[in-house]
Length: 190
Image 1 (spheres, rainbow, N blue to C red):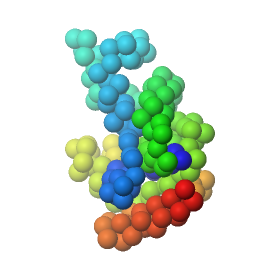
Image 2 (cartoon, rainbow, N blue to C red):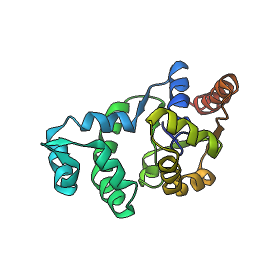
Image 3 (cartoon, one colour):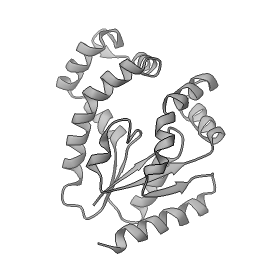
Image 4 (cartoon, one colour):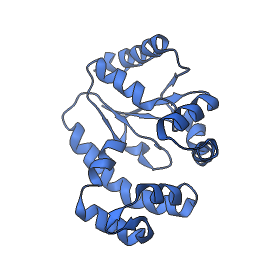
């Protein structure tokens, strides 16, 4: 069974995924796969064709690419259309043979990836909490964090389509109990 762990930036997807791993489940991250792809010359060559402005002296300027895709919906679509098929191909390879694997994926519905998963776990948190986490973690300004969340608004609405919802309000013990409950329900059927 392949389970997507998704939600907006700053919601705590990585923390929830790590807790699933602590329970013994195989886990991986679409972002980690994407980082691996950024060392693949063939992938980078295609990316450079689409976003030549994001390369300086032949090297990818991640900040320039991030700024472009989070300020232009068409640029974000181009990036998703290019990156996601490769990410999902590599995801399937990584989880082959696992009874239940948990895959952290930032934008499940926006990426069209829902069809790849058997179940979904939506991680939610109050907007103010998400903004604070993103500002502290990524070293960006408040306005940029708010803009990113606004762009991901559709993903917040996709909570209605989740099989499970985990509210991450900052209490680690409560969060661990919620993760255990979801894990128990999912693996009980295996």
